[in-house]
Length: 274
Image (cartoon, rainbow, N blue to C red; front, side, top):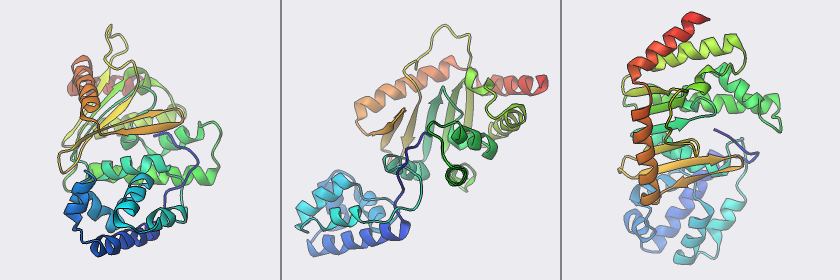
């Protein structure tokens, strides 16, 4: 995942803002459900914000201040929260949704998906960034990326589907040793229960996503979301018409890609050639 030099909010401060929202909500006579319905975000999202597990976004804070007549208190609280690490604010909600998703599908044509990267591969991805990160910044980013991967090994991991363009698999990011370690890791991941790994061959004459990579998520409430990135930012998409288009692209990509079994055979051949 690409990043910009902005920081993720301090977890303790998030809990404080959440507690503040809970006080204002109760004083206004709203339940979590009725407040969530008022803003079409749902009871679960309000609960997550109040518990400090999900950040309160500035636009929602502004709307809540108006509804609850809190004189801009929530907006002010957000503006003065301490900053502690490098996860960009525009990526926070995606990471929160990814952490709780019951299904994840993605297409990548630049680097391997963050959920499947080895520590060494991730280090070299971040080291390639222009302008450059410091070594301390890279260490923090790599640690955060590796931590994300825990969702694949939990008691109830999400159903995951990764389609990766073949040049990405063959690109020797970090050198031959790093690449070989990454290929062994991909091969092992391909055997995880509920995980489908497919390579889109370079010799395909049709390609359903020449517009670039994307991620599809399904939340526990069965809301379907999409996530896309550009050079300098990203977008979490909730519009169901837009999500439907990317879902169609994903289905076509899966039909154009190698089967999971043929993908494992390709990885075995690549590893045998080294």
